[in-house]
Image (cartoon, rainbow, N blue to C red; front, side, top):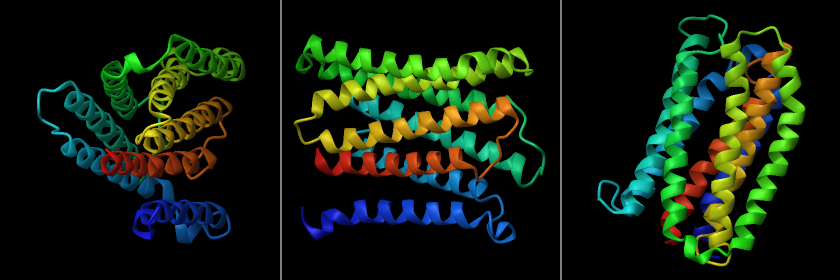
Length: 255
């Protein structure tokens, strides 16, 4: 790999280290860093949206091909997450009010998940002939195992918490949607493992794993009343957004 090809990876690594340093230092200097995630999450979600759009343009974002429709769905999905992050930040800064659960931001985030799912379904179906049934079943088994662990950890605390039914529903909905995305991304990674796109799909899968862990941590913190912005779940989500940006970029340059 040439030095110029390493630059995006080094930039993402440097950003990840900076985010970790801010996360560590904000406990010591809260007045300096303030609600860092309230600014960083929309900024990085916006960057990931731009990266998805640029990758989509590489394949004719507005054309009528199935490949273009898949990337249009990815761009809309990432854009919805960006809008959701902006709405949440409005609660934190201009309104200066505690973040309720759920908010309109949650509805926007969920819409983003469905766009992503549509994009993954379209994309994977284009190459499904390259995937043996044995590998597909292994992917399903892996995600079901992860799902069992997630719900063993979350189900009882959510059901027996004192929140509203709607709030509990969202606490379980986010991890469920994450698992669906993980399955689609794992199938995609399995298809392209030995090809040119293996690296980009690995990055996107890693991003979804981090996003899933962030959602689990956020849901558990909300239930326990211990969630606060700039906590570990937000750091994991910021890392996930960084990998989304890198994964979309790598996909664009490798195909």
